Amino acid sequence: MLQGKKIILGITGSIAAYKAAILLRLLVKAGAEVKVVMTASAKDFVAPLTYSTLSKNPVYSEFSTADGSWNNHVELANWADFILIAPASANTIAKMANGLCDNLLLATYLSASCPVYVAPAMDREMYAHKATLANLEKLRTYKNIIIPAEDGELASGLHGEGRMAEPEHITAFLEKKNADSLRLKGKRALVTAGPTFEAIDPVRFIGNFSSGKMGIAIAEKLASEGAEVTLVHGPIHIENISKNIKSIAVTSAEEMRKACLQVFSKADITVMSAAVADFRPTQKATEKIKKVDAGLTLKLEHTVDILSELGKKKKAGQLLIGFALETNNEQKNAADKLKRKNLDAIVLNSMRSKGAGPGGDTNKITIIDKYNKVKHFELKPKTEVANDIVTYIISCLKK
Ligand code: CTP
Image (tube, rainbow, N blue to C red; front, side):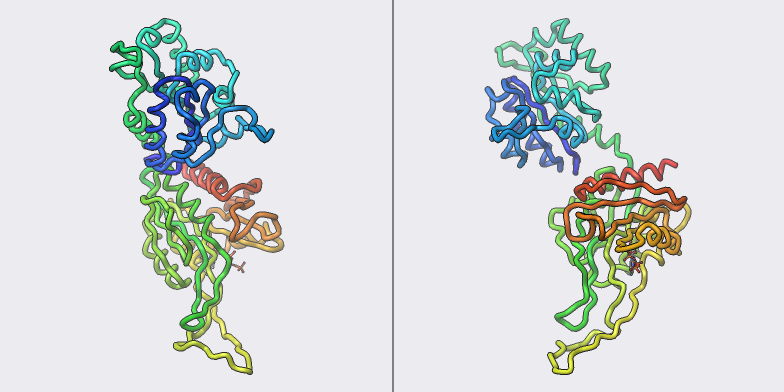
């Protein structure tokens, strides 16, 4: 699986560009998000529309676009978990080996600190030429990973080595590399997400604006690092969630509590990002409450604080992370919560930060740990915030 992996697929001028379309389909099918960067000569073989349709992303080719904006190669390189250049022509390989930068793909390559995979494609004599062999050797010294060309019929009509590896073989190669490098393989994780609804009567409830996006992004990231994830979620949409995440749908805080208690004892990592209702009506009316002139006063009682309960049950080796949504005195309130609930760390988001909090697609967090170490992060899309949280979790497990 390449679930959640972000891949830049670099396509250069080679007849094997047609196979890149099949490769792209396989990568997307394996769960990856792919952005294609193609050289000008690649467009002589296959039109960008093929790749944009298959990847559901724009295809990047020039440094600037028709409307005068800039295709930022640094941003593209930082976005990617890895770069795959397939097909890689002799010309592009030579330029990569020598640090040339006369197109967007090369600029992205030179800007990248992520792994780079290169699948050469050329004619037999070109592939066997000492210059090409030396260039590929140079790429290996840069820690680029070469996916060797295969033996077979070549576009020239010759037979021999030089054909780009078959798309199925490239995908299998990447999946194996990915499986070997998963940092949370063998770990079990519990994540909560979304609101809880506390029934007033058969048709009404007390709830909140949580969309569950933050918790889902964390669950996805943990799963993409190889963890076995159970997502306990309130009433939210989870249709597009990865198949390898086990989900348990609940409605009320009490249902969420019961589901968490079932899973928690075996969880190495627990991230409680759900916006659990703190109060529920003391009684749920069995029939719809009628509109009466005197108005209505609801009597509420506390729900059980699930996180506190898990904090009490926590054993050595279990990592427990809570969330704190605050409106004032943020850092102090969050640090108090961390202590009170016996957490290893707390993720603070403030309602005062623009773009943070429930509902939206971005968040701005601060992570406070049990040693009172504080780490502030920029405002980012929730998927990137999830990366930061999971990177933090991995660093905790290494200690
Ligand atoms: N939480 C929980 N069970 C509850 C209430 C909250 O597990 N009944 C968890 C949330 O999932 C979150 C953390 O506790 O990880 C903090 O939630 P928050 O609403 O910020 O704080 P509270 O503890 O409810 O305190 P307050 O509302 O007074 O700020």
